[in-house]
Image (cartoon, rainbow, N blue to C red; front, side, top):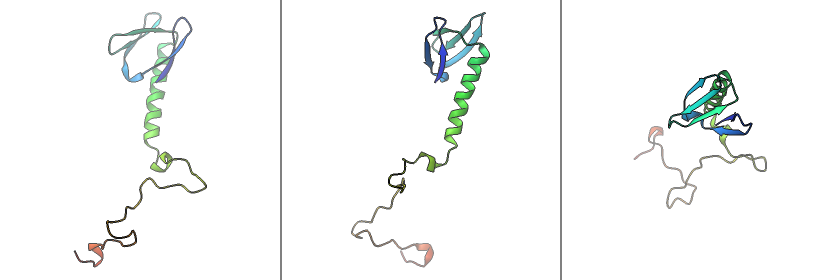
Length: 105
């Protein structure tokens, strides 16, 4: 979402993915894919910069390592996203044999 200002001075958030075009006639008109038009006080260049920054933030967030998306640390220990599930009947202590390390199947 990008923050824009109507000519009346009220601020609103607009889904940047729905913007079809932006015209400057001389007021800046943002047209959405469904035909809805908004007159905004920002210049064409400011709207463009807001959309570019919005998209860059999405790409930057997607590039974060998985560790950055883990829940906050509680009591100094970060809980893993995945954990081992014991095999039925194993009591949680037995490990399955690895065929690649000499085990038989």
